[in-house]
Image (cartoon, rainbow, N blue to C red; front, top):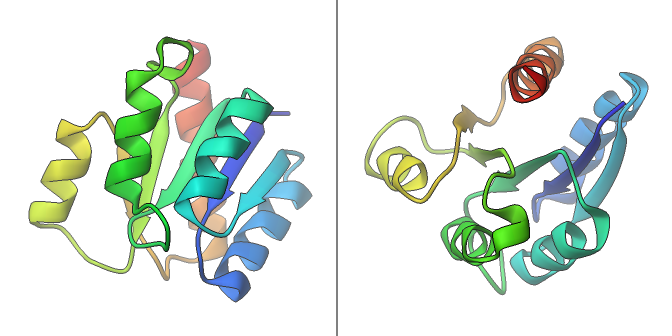
Length: 124
């Protein structure tokens, strides 16, 4: 079981993704905006952060910058989640230290597979 922070301002999507990850056996902490995402990471010592790109208060770029500036979280795996496909935003996410970039709307089974693959890679 891993601890995951899932940050997305879309409540329906966040709830659906959190429920499926909980069903897969993970402890999921939800955040509805960028400030809440930073607090959840600081308070929860997660194994993974799944971070929406466009949220209120702080966007995903800003959250990623804050997280990477804190030594305790410098190596926390971060998967960016966006409705935008590949492009400049994806490149910027990787340059800021994201390890994955996922496009919203993927099947739930694919989300679980991606999370499990990423968590397994971190353990190795």
